[in-house]
Length: 250
Image 1 (cartoon, one colour):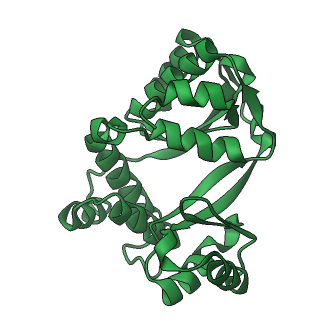
Image 2: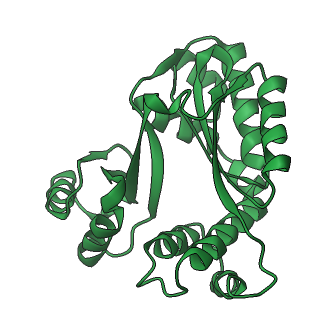
């Protein structure tokens, strides 16, 4: 949905990634460790680990950090993390999905709930908003890698469902085929800028109230800054006026 892309552009406004750089590195390393522990330490035989490493490289996580995270998975004292999904509504009825990796759900759930309460939202049960999203693979390449037609042809041949070329090549594929599609595209265009599993909204939540939009931003900021939260997805679709006010430097 347009709102999903628009929201990401605003969330990654100038300075935000720099502010969260250390947290981003920590979360990437945690995902690598969990992926390696869940399967084998060889990315060629462990698709989850391969995706985690690809995303870590895209965010410029140093090679030493990647290797250290993989080795940590084999340590007897390595923490045991579990994947948890939280769902709820933010200001303006915007649906929110939070993916977390935690070693203590009794710690994480109350913190997530407190953020919803603080920023005019409400946390729901699992499944309360995910029906408005589809869980799919998202592969991103810079526009310079190919023309839109070239990328679309290669992506469809690889088994993808859709491609767009708005500032970057975004390829969408089925959850189950992300490894196969990303490998085929890498053979033709090199390593992707990003290869992720995302929650793509199928129903948008239009938001043209600036105060509610600003509060939503604060809620998502708070969630993303939490150490246990890995990803945050929404179905918001800001009006042009609100988007301009939220991102004045654009």
